[in-house]
Length: 149
Image (cartoon, rainbow, N blue to C red; front, side, top):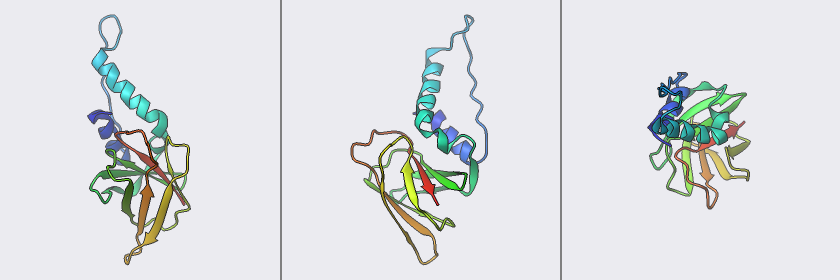
């Protein structure tokens, strides 16, 4: 994934649109560099489209996980989506989620198994969500979690 993909995630979380200008050659083919960028974005969207398409911004746009990695939020059909802007280095990631009180399940988009996770409330009544990443998880520049109420 590249800067255009991370920019795309950031803009979607803020209710924006990203215009990607592709300049085809005279014969109608797309230059290799532009094609690579589009294919990387498309490959990431294969697994993570649910956190992007037909979503709306959430009341909070951005935050970070405990290790300092930025995250962005979207929502759809009552579920909250959290997208990391990078691959977490820690096996367990921890984040505070304000104003989302009920969590019944947490899914990692593109991963078929179940995740180990826990949820507690702090003194401000915010959720403290801890998610254990599955072993041997294929590194991805951005992970998308679906938080199901």
